[in-house]
Length: 330
Image (cartoon, rainbow, N blue to C red):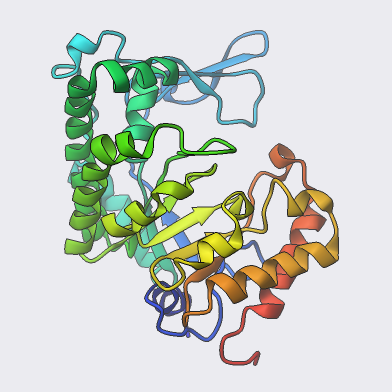
């Protein structure tokens, strides 16, 4: 099977020959990623402004800052400083068909792999930068109508992005939204369902209407809304710390959603213990991928950030390849 069919079968629980993966060479990498070819200016790229401080301005108008050259940084100034401007502030035209010509060419070159179009998140991941996180959380409690207006405007853009990715040849779109702390969801599940779930339902519905899957990355323990995400239409959940949820807990949704997980980068990888790392990889395949699919072997990029040597990550890659065959290793 080619990579594209392997991923499709795994996500649809149709028994691929092996577990799909997103690992570096020489291990399995079944995915091809592409984004929007949005016009860039010099300000959009990281540039040193003083001493060790670096800054850039993103396509939404937010100013990002960092004190080193390898991290993604954090927003130091959100573009929406006055919530009264929520209906009039200019938003980027990320659904412009002209920005997807190069994307389509890239997908055509990578057509044997499963092609994923990158989204900037759903409304939460975009709006929280526009207002900055601390103010945004206050807004959710005190100004919900204004925030929902902002969300609707963002969702309009995301809907057009999804439609353009589908026309460009994407098999899926992928968003990243880190919804959990180490212990629980960042807001109450009730607030999440009231303010955010309708947007998920809308955008997942659009994606499925045009024939693409929806993949979601989320860090932290956001276990309480996994059933809601499944109900909304999320096809794949990507976790870098699956043990924060508990593998037995995740296993209860085996067959309803596909889990794309690396060996846990907060716990197991940190031990550097080959036996524990291999056991972790095997347990995830057995518990999460036991429905004729439903599991994708992940990889933690940025070893310098998580403090794990590459040779430790390689132990996990070898374990996934060793145990990841559904129909017998050739």
